[in-house]
Image 1 (tube, rainbow, N blue to C red):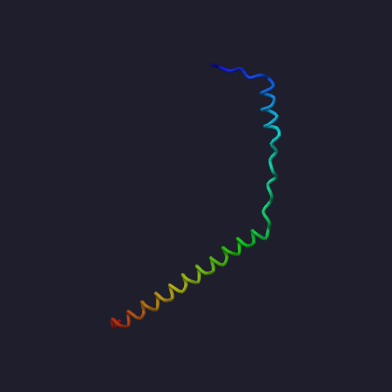
Image 2: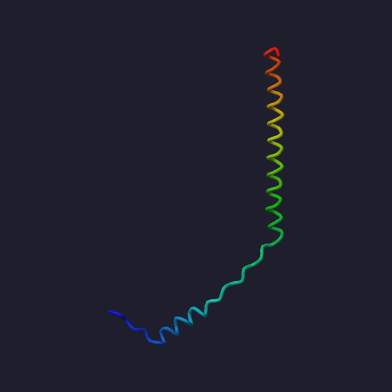
Length: 71
């Protein structure tokens, strides 16, 4: 069966909802952002170094293979 709520029950539910306050969101500190930026910069430098080293190795291996073929 349907139950009819009393106005006092609705009032207490509204009070419970209104009693909740949201906590303020803290802004990220700039030191943490700098740490993330440094992480990506170091990672990018390592990637560029590794790709460059690979192309140098591949070019030298290609030239060495050409010498062995007598070209």
